[in-house]
View (cartoon, rainbow, N blue to C red):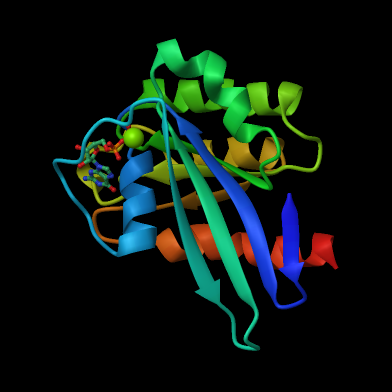
Length: 178
Ligand code: GDP
Ligand code: MG
C-alpha cells in the first residue's frame, strides 16, 4: 500500500520475489547504492533497504524494499513480506528457464494470497547475458500480459532499466492513490 506521511511525502512498500540466484539483491543494491558487486552474498531470510526518490515538484517517494531469499526453506515466510506490499516484483534470470517457471509459481501465489490491489511486475534480469539467453522476451511479455503485470528486462550489472523498474510504478501508484 501507498501511504502519505504528509501531502508531499509518499511511502511505497515493495517486495522482491524469485528463485535464488536470479539477481534480486544485486537489483536492489544497484538501485539504492548504484553499485554492482559480483561476489555479493546469498540473502538469508530477507533483507530491508530503503531509497527515497525526489520528484520534480518536491514530492518524495520512499521505497521500502524487502529483498527475500529465494530458497525453498524460506518459502513459508514469503507472505510476511508480500502482505501489505504495494508492489511485488517477481524476478527471473533470462539465462535460466527453471527460474522462469519459479516466477510463474510466485505469480500464482501472489494472485491467490496477495492483496487484490497489489501491483505486480515481472522482471527478466541478467539481460546483459544475451548470448546465454534461454527465455525469450516474447515469453516474458506474454506471461506478464496474461496476468496483468508490468514487464521489463533489466541488468543489475550494466544498470540497464534498473531505475525504470522502480520508477515505472510511480505513475500507476499515484493515480490509484489520488
Ligand atoms: P538473488 O539470490 O536473487 O538475490 O541473486 P544475487 O543478487 O545474489 O545474484 C546472484 C548472482 O547473479 C551473483 O553472482 C551476481 O553477481 C549475478 N548477477 C546478478 N545480477 C546480474 C546481472 O544483471 N547480470 C549478470 N551477468 N550477473 C548478475
Ligand atoms: Mg539475495
